[in-house]
Image 1 (cartoon, rainbow, N blue to C red):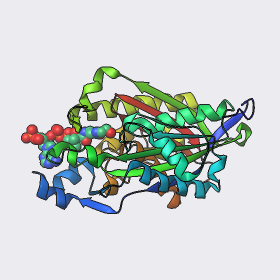
Image 2 (cartoon, protein in one colour; image 1 turned 90 degrees about the vertical axis):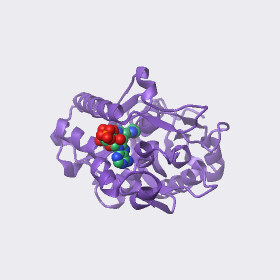
Image 3 (cartoon, rainbow, N blue to C red; image 1 turned 120 degrees about the vertical axis):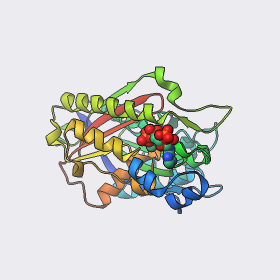
Length: 321
Ligand code: UT7
């Protein structure tokens, strides 16, 4: 990749968004037939009604490709102008090679491409990585994709986890604009605490998700509140300034608890987990694309992203749309 400019005074806007979810729907009613649970319990404790399941043979790179093409179309950008492809995933097609180069070839792009793993915080970590590429002048356009085929990693006899997760892909194109426009990513703040690695994990020998749900829930509410408050303060915004929060979609009760603590009205928190469950790294870009297509984002709106995932890892980002 060639450096295009010295990088002074550029910001990263989200110039295009897109998403792709598999066609097959797994409803709570179907899960009632598989494990000892009820639709009423799942809706009350999580807010989830259904999730999408990849078809046999449908891979992360297949979903990523469609989401990426939609984001590029929305940006009006041809793939050859991409300077970097970043793919956040914990469910790549295979251990090696990464989804990134597979996607690069399928798109007809020529830029460097890689995967990285930050579980459900993958998209927010990716915003920080992409922003650094753009602000340092190394890239003008970066494609960031969050994609998961988590259904392959779910134990469908474990009622605590099989109700939560789903498959899908979301993508954004980040593009450099002069900082004077006032638009784009203003701040990203990341955190990690590996002491809690075991509370949400996929062990190599077992190969399926294991989770201490209550512990994750507690960490999610506390860490998300802290990181959002820090990101807002460092950006110079108050909670009242934020037009839309697009959080990781894990559990509606987590979103409501965080909204209450940071004092943002529930209507300003975008939620679509009712239809997709938790799609890990894909959840924020899917939600963002739906919010944009529904007309929930106007030029100049102040947008906040926040996520926590296995690691533990977490982060928040502030952006002027
Ligand atoms: O992106 C990060 C990924 N993970 C998460 O965000 C998960 C965070 N955690 C959660 O979303 C929630 O902890 C769960 C939805 C997993 C569980 O909800 P909860 O309100 O924390 O339930 P609990 O673990 O405190 O369990 C309450 C009861 C238990 O029964 P007993 O011990 O009170 O008799 C569970 O066995 O609910 C039972 N239970 C269920 N009942 C019906 C657990 N799962 C189910 C189920 N259906 N699917």
